Amino acid sequence: MRSVHIFTTAQDNWLLEGVRCALQMCGVQVQVIGVGSVGALLNHVVGGSNTLPAGSLLLPVFPENQMLTCFRSLTFLSEWRALQHGLFRMRAPCLLWGQAPVIRRVEWRDGPYIPWRITPRDLGQRILWGIQAWSSPARNRLLREVFRSVRLSPRESEVLCYTMEGHSLVWMAEKLGVTSKTVWTHRRRAMDLLGIRRLHELMQLPGGSFCDEKEVFM
Image (cartoon, rainbow, N blue to C red):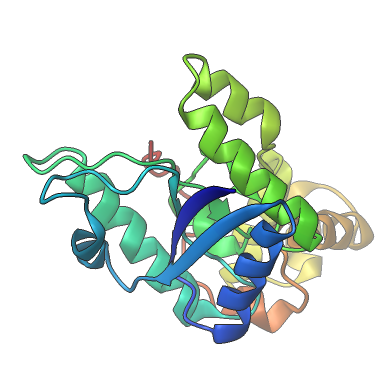
C-alpha cells in the first residue's frame, strides 16, 4: 500500500481525521501532520537533509468562517515562499484547500486549489493527483488541468471593493450606472464563488483584499 505524508495548517482534529479518512478511502497509508509554521517541517526532513519524505504534500487550509486558520495559512505560505529563495531550499507540492476570500489578498491565480466543499473521496483523489502531477515533467500544465481557479470579473471585484469601503447598493448603482439589483447580483455571485455566506463575514476581511493586485505566490 502506498504511503503519503500530508503537512497541513489545520489544527482541528475533525479536519485532520477527515483528511486521513479521505486518503484511506483511496487505498493509501497516510500520516496527517498539523504544522503551525514552516519551521515545524524541519522536524520531518529525511536524514538531516532538506528533503521531506517521499509522497509528501503541503496542504494549507482556508475554511469558511475561520479567519484565524486562514491567516495562519497565509503566514505559512509567506514563510514557505521565503524559504524557496534562501540557502535552505525545501521543495514539495503545495495545494490550497478552500477558497476563503482572504486568499484573494495574495492572488494565488496559478496555484492549484481544492474546493472546500467536496466529497471525501474527491478530496483524497485530488490530493493524490497533486502529488503525482508534481513528479511529472509537465506538472504545471497538469496541475492547471486538475484544479481550476476561481476568478472574479473586474465588475465583481469592483463591487466587493466598494462594499468593503462601506458604500450602499444605491451609491454603487449610481457610480456604476446600473440598477441596485444588478449590483446585488454581482455581489452575491462573487460571495458565492469565494465561499462567503453573509455580508458581515465579508466586512471582517482586511481592507483592500479585492482592490489591489498583489504578488503571485509561485
